[in-house]
Image (spheres, rainbow, N blue to C red):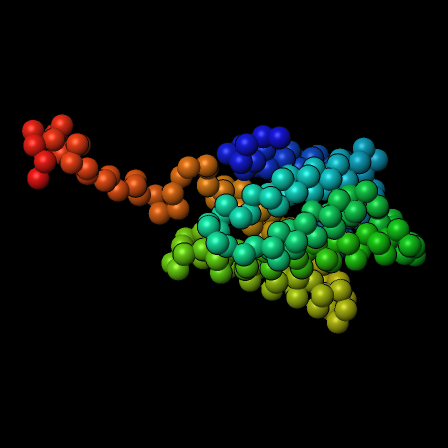
Length: 224
């Protein structure tokens, strides 16, 4: 098991690989409209399975961050709920990657429903992770501000997607979903890059040196 200092780097590598696979999967499908159709629609139409592999890779990268969250909030941070929600995100994404939806224009079956609800749980869980973590960080923290902004943006985009799916007649449904995915992946990147390394103090200040009589004698010639 790699040390905590390597977890962020491993997660970032997994996120980068997942992004590359998603791009490859999109380029392999040329007869679909990305403005209206979802990434899952592209995934089921991608004969090479690159997008499904991207989902699984992103799920694994996310799972690496679950045990590392406590270091981000510092000593005494109660992050059990955030860890659980991040596990829900990773698990939902894994299920969505392994269980494909139905091809565009066909009736939804059991597998498609499993895929849909696993995806919904995942995309709702991750913004809550960001918000909970931001609440445990020091007031005025730049990381905390970004976590809150990305969490709010994700929830707004999720609401826009729900509107598009029902009263909006799927207007720009695919575009909204891709914006949501990019926002939540950005939140994951922030989590991975914000992980402190072992031994590093959260304030970034070196520990104060205690001056003992022996040290003072060695420096100034006699104790003060």
